[in-house]
Length: 292
Image (cartoon, rainbow, N blue to C red; front, side, top):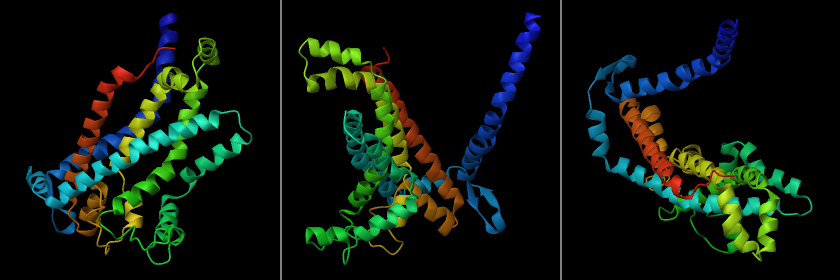
Protein backbone atom coordinates (compact mmCIF):
# COMPACT_ATOMS: atom_id res chain seq x y z
CA UNK A 1 0.00 0.00 0.00
CA UNK A 2 2.81 2.38 0.91
CA UNK A 3 4.65 1.56 -2.32
CA UNK A 4 1.51 2.27 -4.34
CA UNK A 5 1.00 5.58 -2.56
CA UNK A 6 4.63 6.47 -3.12
CA UNK A 7 4.31 5.61 -6.81
CA UNK A 8 1.23 7.84 -7.13
CA UNK A 9 3.04 10.71 -5.43
CA UNK A 10 6.00 10.34 -7.79
CA UNK A 11 3.68 10.23 -10.80
CA UNK A 12 1.92 13.43 -9.76
CA UNK A 13 5.29 14.99 -9.04
CA UNK A 14 6.45 14.26 -12.60
CA UNK A 15 3.16 15.56 -13.97
CA UNK A 16 3.59 18.82 -12.06
CA UNK A 17 7.17 19.45 -13.15
CA UNK A 18 6.57 18.09 -16.67
CA UNK A 19 5.51 21.42 -18.26
CA UNK A 20 8.52 23.20 -16.76
CA UNK A 21 10.93 20.51 -17.97
CA UNK A 22 9.31 20.53 -21.41
CA UNK A 23 9.55 24.31 -21.61
CA UNK A 24 13.20 24.17 -20.52
CA UNK A 25 14.01 21.63 -23.24
CA UNK A 26 12.14 23.45 -26.01
CA UNK A 27 12.87 27.06 -25.12
CA UNK A 28 16.36 26.84 -23.60
CA UNK A 29 18.33 23.65 -24.12
CA UNK A 30 17.41 22.95 -27.76
CA UNK A 31 18.04 26.57 -28.91
CA UNK A 32 21.40 26.54 -27.13
CA UNK A 33 22.44 23.29 -28.83
CA UNK A 34 21.26 24.68 -32.17
CA UNK A 35 23.26 27.86 -31.55
CA UNK A 36 26.39 25.75 -31.05
CA UNK A 37 25.64 24.00 -34.35
CA UNK A 38 25.16 27.31 -36.14
CA UNK A 39 28.40 28.69 -34.69
CA UNK A 40 30.24 25.90 -36.52
CA UNK A 41 28.51 26.69 -39.82
CA UNK A 42 28.52 29.37 -42.50
CA UNK A 43 25.33 30.95 -43.83
CA UNK A 44 24.51 30.17 -47.45
CA UNK A 45 21.73 31.25 -49.80
CA UNK A 46 18.10 30.28 -49.13
CA UNK A 47 18.73 29.53 -45.45
CA UNK A 48 21.28 26.76 -46.07
CA UNK A 49 24.30 26.20 -43.83
CA UNK A 50 27.73 24.74 -44.51
CA UNK A 51 29.88 23.20 -41.78
CA UNK A 52 33.10 25.23 -41.41
CA UNK A 53 34.36 23.98 -38.05
CA UNK A 54 36.03 26.63 -35.90
CA UNK A 55 36.40 29.17 -38.70
CA UNK A 56 33.81 31.53 -37.20
CA UNK A 57 35.66 31.50 -33.89
CA UNK A 58 38.98 32.13 -35.63
CA UNK A 59 37.49 35.08 -37.50
CA UNK A 60 35.89 36.34 -34.31
CA UNK A 61 39.09 36.25 -32.26
CA UNK A 62 40.95 37.99 -35.08
CA UNK A 63 38.41 40.83 -35.23
CA UNK A 64 39.26 44.11 -33.49
CA UNK A 65 35.55 45.01 -33.51
CA UNK A 66 34.75 41.85 -31.53
CA UNK A 67 37.38 42.57 -28.88
CA UNK A 68 36.18 46.17 -28.67
CA UNK A 69 32.62 44.94 -28.08
CA UNK A 70 33.90 42.52 -25.42
CA UNK A 71 35.73 45.32 -23.65
CA UNK A 72 32.65 47.55 -23.91
CA UNK A 73 30.52 44.86 -22.25
CA UNK A 74 33.02 44.35 -19.44
CA UNK A 75 33.50 48.07 -18.94
CA UNK A 76 29.73 48.54 -18.88
CA UNK A 77 29.59 46.00 -16.01
CA UNK A 78 32.29 47.90 -14.14
CA UNK A 79 30.38 51.16 -14.58
CA UNK A 80 26.94 49.86 -13.61
CA UNK A 81 27.20 46.94 -11.18
CA UNK A 82 29.20 48.40 -8.23
CA UNK A 83 27.41 51.76 -8.31
CA UNK A 84 23.99 50.23 -8.96
CA UNK A 85 24.21 47.62 -6.20
CA UNK A 86 25.59 50.17 -3.70
CA UNK A 87 22.78 52.64 -4.45
CA UNK A 88 20.22 49.84 -4.27
CA UNK A 89 21.49 48.77 -0.85
CA UNK A 90 21.49 52.37 0.40
CA UNK A 91 18.01 52.88 -0.96
CA UNK A 92 16.78 49.66 0.63
CA UNK A 93 18.04 50.80 4.03
CA UNK A 94 16.29 54.16 3.63
CA UNK A 95 13.05 52.47 2.55
CA UNK A 96 13.28 50.22 5.59
CA UNK A 97 13.52 53.22 7.91
CA UNK A 98 10.53 54.39 9.89
CA UNK A 99 9.43 57.24 7.63
CA UNK A 100 6.02 58.41 6.46
CA UNK A 101 4.82 57.33 3.04
CA UNK A 102 7.53 54.72 2.54
CA UNK A 103 5.07 52.48 0.65
CA UNK A 104 4.61 55.26 -1.89
CA UNK A 105 8.36 55.69 -2.24
CA UNK A 106 8.78 51.93 -2.80
CA UNK A 107 6.24 52.08 -5.63
CA UNK A 108 7.91 55.12 -7.19
CA UNK A 109 11.37 53.53 -7.16
CA UNK A 110 9.99 50.31 -8.66
CA UNK A 111 8.16 52.07 -11.52
CA UNK A 112 11.13 52.12 -13.97
CA UNK A 113 11.05 48.29 -14.03
CA UNK A 114 7.46 48.21 -15.33
CA UNK A 115 8.08 50.85 -18.00
CA UNK A 116 9.08 49.56 -21.44
CA UNK A 117 12.88 49.77 -21.94
CA UNK A 118 12.33 51.45 -25.29
CA UNK A 119 10.31 54.24 -23.66
CA UNK A 120 12.94 54.69 -20.93
CA UNK A 121 15.74 54.89 -23.49
CA UNK A 122 13.90 57.35 -25.72
CA UNK A 123 13.10 59.71 -22.82
CA UNK A 124 16.69 59.69 -21.59
CA UNK A 125 17.96 60.10 -25.15
CA UNK A 126 15.95 63.27 -25.42
CA UNK A 127 17.19 64.46 -22.01
CA UNK A 128 20.82 63.88 -23.07
CA UNK A 129 20.38 65.61 -26.44
CA UNK A 130 23.29 67.99 -27.03
CA UNK A 131 21.18 70.70 -28.69
CA UNK A 132 17.94 70.93 -26.69
CA UNK A 133 18.28 68.30 -23.95
CA UNK A 134 17.15 69.22 -20.45
CA UNK A 135 20.42 68.06 -18.85
CA UNK A 136 22.58 70.43 -20.89
CA UNK A 137 20.03 73.18 -20.27
CA UNK A 138 20.25 72.69 -16.50
CA UNK A 139 24.04 72.47 -16.51
CA UNK A 140 24.50 75.27 -19.05
CA UNK A 141 26.77 73.07 -21.18
CA UNK A 142 26.89 71.70 -24.74
CA UNK A 143 28.22 68.24 -23.94
CA UNK A 144 27.58 65.61 -26.61
CA UNK A 145 26.48 62.91 -24.20
CA UNK A 146 25.48 60.35 -26.83
CA UNK A 147 27.73 61.14 -29.78
CA UNK A 148 31.03 61.64 -27.95
CA UNK A 149 32.95 58.30 -28.04
CA UNK A 150 34.70 59.04 -24.75
CA UNK A 151 31.53 59.39 -22.65
CA UNK A 152 28.77 57.56 -24.56
CA UNK A 153 29.14 54.38 -22.48
CA UNK A 154 29.02 56.43 -19.26
CA UNK A 155 25.76 57.96 -20.47
CA UNK A 156 24.25 54.54 -21.16
CA UNK A 157 25.48 53.35 -17.75
CA UNK A 158 23.64 56.19 -16.00
CA UNK A 159 20.38 55.18 -17.65
CA UNK A 160 20.96 51.51 -16.82
CA UNK A 161 21.60 52.24 -13.14
CA UNK A 162 18.54 54.50 -12.93
CA UNK A 163 16.25 51.88 -14.46
CA UNK A 164 17.46 48.93 -12.36
CA UNK A 165 18.28 50.38 -8.94
CA UNK A 166 14.64 50.36 -7.79
CA UNK A 167 14.11 46.68 -8.55
CA UNK A 168 17.37 45.70 -6.84
CA UNK A 169 16.43 47.85 -3.85
CA UNK A 170 13.12 46.03 -3.45
CA UNK A 171 14.92 42.67 -3.47
CA UNK A 172 17.44 43.86 -0.90
CA UNK A 173 14.65 45.37 1.17
CA UNK A 174 13.01 41.96 1.43
CA UNK A 175 16.30 40.55 2.72
CA UNK A 176 16.73 43.36 5.26
CA UNK A 177 13.22 42.90 6.58
CA UNK A 178 13.96 39.24 7.29
CA UNK A 179 16.69 40.22 9.77
CA UNK A 180 15.49 39.79 13.34
CA UNK A 181 15.28 43.04 15.28
CA UNK A 182 16.73 41.25 18.29
CA UNK A 183 20.19 41.50 16.68
CA UNK A 184 19.97 45.28 16.54
CA UNK A 185 18.56 45.50 20.06
CA UNK A 186 21.42 43.41 21.43
CA UNK A 187 23.96 45.48 19.50
CA UNK A 188 22.45 48.71 20.86
CA UNK A 189 22.74 47.41 24.40
CA UNK A 190 26.41 46.68 23.73
CA UNK A 191 26.91 50.27 22.58
CA UNK A 192 27.10 49.68 18.82
CA UNK A 193 26.02 52.66 16.73
CA UNK A 194 24.11 52.62 13.41
CA UNK A 195 27.27 52.44 11.28
CA UNK A 196 28.74 49.53 13.25
CA UNK A 197 25.36 47.76 13.16
CA UNK A 198 25.29 48.22 9.39
CA UNK A 199 28.66 46.54 8.83
CA UNK A 200 28.38 43.86 11.54
CA UNK A 201 24.70 42.94 11.26
CA UNK A 202 23.00 44.26 8.12
CA UNK A 203 25.69 43.41 5.57
CA UNK A 204 26.39 39.85 6.83
CA UNK A 205 22.69 39.00 7.25
CA UNK A 206 21.62 40.41 3.89
CA UNK A 207 24.62 38.97 2.05
CA UNK A 208 22.68 36.02 0.49
CA UNK A 209 20.20 38.43 -1.11
CA UNK A 210 23.06 40.75 -2.06
CA UNK A 211 24.81 37.83 -3.74
CA UNK A 212 21.72 37.03 -5.84
CA UNK A 213 21.32 40.67 -6.84
CA UNK A 214 24.99 40.85 -7.79
CA UNK A 215 24.70 37.78 -10.04
CA UNK A 216 21.53 39.07 -11.70
CA UNK A 217 23.01 42.51 -12.33
CA UNK A 218 26.28 41.17 -13.75
CA UNK A 219 24.45 38.85 -16.12
CA UNK A 220 22.10 41.61 -17.24
CA UNK A 221 25.02 44.01 -17.81
CA UNK A 222 26.96 41.52 -19.89
CA UNK A 223 23.84 40.90 -22.00
CA UNK A 224 22.87 44.55 -22.43
CA UNK A 225 21.39 45.28 -25.83
CA UNK A 226 18.07 47.13 -25.93
CA UNK A 227 19.28 50.19 -24.03
CA UNK A 228 22.30 50.74 -26.29
CA UNK A 229 20.28 49.92 -29.41
CA UNK A 230 17.69 52.60 -28.58
CA UNK A 231 20.14 55.29 -27.47
CA UNK A 232 22.92 54.83 -30.05
CA UNK A 233 21.87 54.98 -33.71
CA UNK A 234 23.53 53.06 -36.52
CA UNK A 235 24.86 56.35 -37.91
CA UNK A 236 26.20 57.50 -34.54
CA UNK A 237 29.98 58.15 -34.70
CA UNK A 238 30.28 56.72 -31.17
CA UNK A 239 28.71 53.37 -32.11
CA UNK A 240 31.99 51.43 -32.01
CA UNK A 241 32.70 52.72 -28.51
CA UNK A 242 29.21 51.82 -27.26
CA UNK A 243 28.16 48.58 -28.90
CA UNK A 244 28.08 45.53 -26.64
CA UNK A 245 28.47 41.88 -27.56
CA UNK A 246 24.71 41.47 -27.93
CA UNK A 247 24.55 44.59 -30.09
CA UNK A 248 27.29 43.15 -32.30
CA UNK A 249 25.35 39.88 -32.43
CA UNK A 250 22.28 41.78 -33.64
CA UNK A 251 24.24 43.54 -36.38
CA UNK A 252 25.92 40.37 -37.63
CA UNK A 253 22.78 38.23 -37.49
CA UNK A 254 19.93 40.48 -38.59
CA UNK A 255 21.71 43.14 -40.64
CA UNK A 256 24.71 41.36 -42.16
CA UNK A 257 22.92 37.98 -42.25
CA UNK A 258 26.00 36.16 -40.95
CA UNK A 259 24.19 33.92 -38.46
CA UNK A 260 27.10 31.52 -38.02
CA UNK A 261 29.45 34.28 -36.91
CA UNK A 262 26.69 35.81 -34.77
CA UNK A 263 26.11 32.45 -33.06
CA UNK A 264 29.80 32.27 -32.20
CA UNK A 265 29.43 35.66 -30.49
CA UNK A 266 26.53 34.28 -28.44
CA UNK A 267 28.55 31.24 -27.35
CA UNK A 268 31.43 33.51 -26.34
CA UNK A 269 29.01 35.66 -24.30
CA UNK A 270 27.60 32.58 -22.57
CA UNK A 271 31.12 31.41 -21.71
CA UNK A 272 32.02 34.88 -20.42
CA UNK A 273 28.92 34.92 -18.20
CA UNK A 274 29.72 31.39 -17.03
CA UNK A 275 33.26 32.37 -16.02
CA UNK A 276 32.07 35.46 -14.15
CA UNK A 277 29.34 33.46 -12.39
CA UNK A 278 31.79 30.70 -11.43
CA UNK A 279 34.17 33.27 -9.95
CA UNK A 280 31.28 34.72 -7.95
CA UNK A 281 30.26 31.33 -6.59
CA UNK A 282 33.85 30.60 -5.58
CA UNK A 283 34.27 33.99 -3.94
CA UNK A 284 30.91 33.96 -2.15
CA UNK A 285 32.20 31.35 0.28
CA UNK A 286 34.33 34.07 1.88
CA UNK A 287 31.71 36.79 2.31
CA UNK A 288 28.19 35.34 2.05
CA UNK A 289 26.70 34.30 5.40
CA UNK A 290 23.95 31.66 5.22
CA UNK A 291 23.71 31.12 8.97
CA UNK A 292 20.71 32.54 10.75
